[in-house]
Length: 480
Image (cartoon, rainbow, N blue to C red; front, side, top):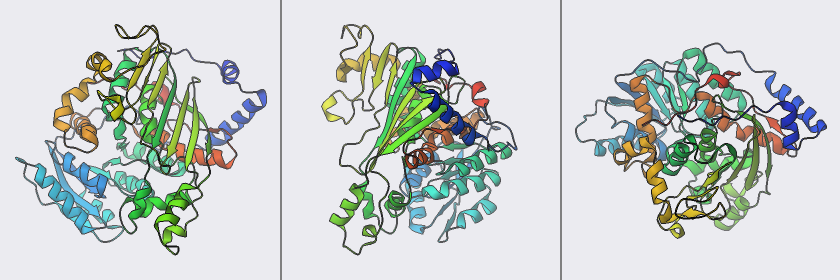
């Protein structure tokens, strides 16, 4: 297996190559000290390569079964040697619909009695006490992710939580400390890492197709203004308030997760170092609310202070750079960018289609010296039908194995591939593809970008959630 091996860059060389002045270097050092001096001591064991005891039969419970949770329940509950034992949600119809969705999928597997908890904010706690599941899936509003994950681990369950894993650094540390103390998995459900193009890119990178990695570009560009129509329940009913009360990049992980895995960040080779961030003016949400809702409507009473588009730049320990953008408001097509630049070539895009004109962001590649029998230099992109041989050669073996099985699950089958992999790891007692520290690193872009914006773009140091242990954490392999 090939893993990129870049020589360590000493501090003097890093400062020189990064264009930092002595004064900036001193400032950065001060920020680093102030960011990491209060790292809490661990009360347990490092979880980077953690393998939990095998679970021959996985007893699973779900907290939150709206749009995301119901899909997880319907697919995970149909995997052999899994058993849905309980479901909790504010609304009984969400629970009934999700169980019905599972029933419709099952052909040979029979459902046992599933305990239902609904109607009150804290019924999920009663569920944990009474049912004592092995595994809990959490798909609720962002503010509830951390307390629900922490309590579930304390009650003895492995936790799989929707993105982001938490919204502030304090809660991220609480999640890490609880995971280490209780020796329970806490994985953020970053499903984009299991999308077809991202898995192909990972395979190509591990095989050194584009050489040493230098730069990545990631984004979550998704016009979600119509979610504001969900006024009393549903994602828009709570997400809309974040454009008023929050700041920075509110949803970084879909674009950043794959780039971080390409670069082996927080795994032996490299790690997150610092981030700078700026946001555009906040205009779009206010205009949308004024156009579509009465003057006295609650959406017209919010102060949409968070900028419409956020741009951040991350610097890694080795000096690599990552551009991360976020925009859920502007009228523009969906994109995650998904660009990775190496010394021997570049990969970009996330839509694999024969006709690039039918995609938002078609996959394109360019290699130093060109692509065999197609181009003669790196000046020309290769995409569409010309990618057929490259896709066949570097198709991720795990994607090929599960593609047919996962069809029909959310996001074109990629959610099913992710959930199948989770079940496989739990059944076999092997490490997960994403550990608790990665979920915190990727999610920490939100509070760190907010702080950088507040300080007029000043660099912010990432806390080392691994306490230095990333240097011994194994890189993510290409599993078959």
